[in-house]
Structures are given as structure tokens and as C-alpha cells.
Length: 119
Image (tube, rainbow, N blue to C red; front, side, top):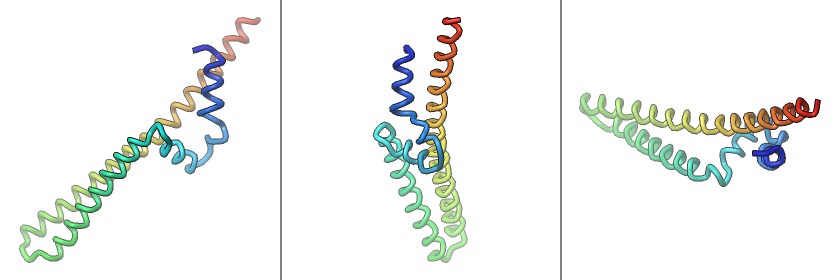
């Protein structure tokens, strides 16, 4: 990559104004490039919540302690799956931030290389 390509990428995609705040991080996550990941996360998140709610309701309807134990264990398991999905989404958001910072560092290194070559 030459300097002009890096500058164009940083100015177009990795703008400094988008670098601040949680809202900009969410904006990076919900863009066209990561739409499939966002759909995947929302789909499985809703599935896990629905199953956990079902298990919670069945826990209170059931008379047998065996079934109550089973539904309680399933409820906890699906809530843990939900937390894993949330952690995955959080890591995807931070991956975009890291990409932005790496591109900025590439640009700075290219500029420093030019300065050193000119001296």
C-alpha cells in the first residue's frame, strides 16, 4: 500500500470524528460490512432469550423437583450462552477499533519514513 491509499482509507473509513464514544463504536458495528455478524448475533441472542424464558416459565409450572432442577439448569445454560454471544459482539466492536488504530499507525509510519528519506 502506498501513502495515498492509506490516507484515503483513514480519511474515508477511519475518520477521527468517529473515534470518540460508544455510539461511534456501535455505528461501526452496525454498518454494511458487519451486517451478517450483527444479524447472526441478534438471531442467536433472541433464540437463547426465548428458550431461557420458556425454561423459567416451565420451572414454576412443574411440580417435580427433578424437572425443576432440569429447567433451572437449562435456564442458567441458555443465559450463559447469551452472555457468550454478547462477549462475541463486544469483541467484534473492539476489533473495528483496533483496525482503525492500526491504519492510523500505518499512516504515521509512512509519514515518518518519508521524513527520514527526505533528510
